[in-house]
Every structure is written in structure tokens, then in C-alpha cells.
Length: 124
Image (cartoon, rainbow, N blue to C red):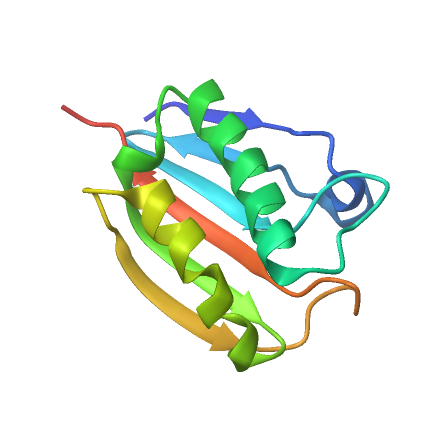
């Protein structure tokens, strides 16, 4: 099995020692991803969209798309913040919804309101 690592240059990748995604055989494992950039939006929906953009770029570099995602984990400090994200998530996954779990937990920085982690299948 070949393993390929994909970096997005995110703030915590070098500090913590991880990469945005790992392609291992037929699976693409995308690390927990928060909003990116110098100015973190304060709105949870904007943070969700930012995280999905970063995830989408990692998936594309791995040769996958959101249609290939089979598992997603959502982590939010405030469970009530999840519902406003539902329309964005439904539009992102469309006719190919993955198995999903939402957790409530603190994130690495209190500015973050959502973290998203996905696994995609790119086999035949």
C-alpha cells in the first residue's frame, strides 16, 4: 500500500506535527479542519464554509471530491451552533451524504466554532 501525505500549510500543521490529509491505499483521511486564514470569521456558518473549502482542496489534491466522502465527524464546542450549518453541509454533500457524527468538545483555539474531519474512498 502506498501512502501519500498532503499539506495545506495550515497554522497548526507544523506546530503540532500533522498533515492535512493522508492517502493510504483507497482511503483519504482528512484531518480535523477549522476555518483558515489570518482573519477567522466569528460566524459558525462562515467558519464551516472555510473549513469545507480547505477540505475540498485536500480532497481534490488526493483525486477525490465530496461525493467520495464516506464518513464525517463534526466537532463543535456549542451543540446549538450545528443546526445553522445544516444547509451548507446538505448542499456540499448533495446526493452523496456520508455517515456522520457530531461531537461537542472544546477546540484548539476558543475562536473556532466548528472542526470537520472526513474520510473518503477513492477505490474502484
